[in-house]
Image (cartoon, rainbow, N blue to C red):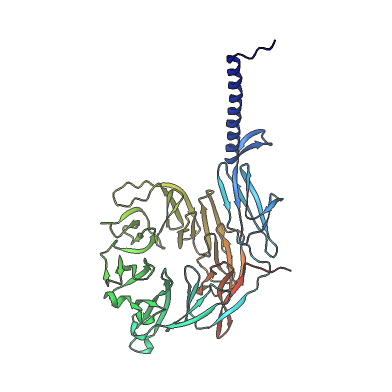
Length: 496
């Protein structure tokens, strides 16, 4: 005779089923979470270890990848989850040279290798716009949509080349004579130089040197309306020394500059000079929300670096370093949740970190040592990239970079051949630098790897990637009377 289970038995059965299901769900979630965090079984060690994630991409995309000599089975962009260690990567795309580098995978971390810019196998330089060999100054805008070209040092006529289409075009603009001061006689001479663009890319800052005493005046050249250009020295009644002017507003109507040794704000709308923000300054940079990063003149063989803002009553000193033959340099950037301070002097630079950048002069600033970068000669350039990932110093014949993402320090010698040294490398993007080697543009990745000679180059006239990254532009000598805006195509390469 059948007897149904008692309530107690039914309860324990249900309890057991629910418990097993709950344990299974928790176990499944734990396994998935562990996999997401990079945990896996190591066949080598026979235990569970936390791995890391490698995110890979390239420009152009679609490159085949090998990892430690084995085809990965996927093209860029893609990712790899694996155990910690160093991995030899190669990227290869038809029509392009092979890119290769050994990169680390770190436990619980993401390593980004999305920066490789592949170089074509066949590099053909193409002349576009022609200019006279008397051209002495040229500068691309921040977006690389426009390239300003001064065709003769003694004549303020600027050609503006547009680079945001496949066929560059150019238009000339001349600064009216009444805007600048002419020397009393032609024999005394007069020369112009392009210094910078405004943020809206409608105006240029020109440096004009003239007369027997080589006086300097600064001019905001409105290329769209030349008659509305402004002579800064005249407008503000400045008769003394003005150095290192830098735009703070995109319309070019406000600048910072060192005026007779003091950093001041130059307001062209109100035609006023601010009070001195910091005295005895030899250099400064702008950072973030109008922070002025300054370097002072040596006092008792020490140079002070610090920062200040317009609303500060006094500057905030960060550190004093020993003065040398080359002035100290100071830069600041933010990387994830930390601020980094790079301070160079003599042959080295110290990288310091802080959890905050106090927006006043009284809050405590706690600095921790992160890294020391050292070169064989005096540091002539020290900077943190805009994204904060790289601290780079240069001495004219070599450079050293500290990568904050993987905490790795590298040092590389410049390959310059017959090209002049010392030379200062410049960034084409956040990861690729360029210099000159035997009269050719040479690229270096931030760590000195994957170097390439690209095309003939007149280095004093600069270089830039086009806005789309399709072309790399520079200037090359054509003959004794002519130079040309020259380019190499990097994207949309046709292959047979």
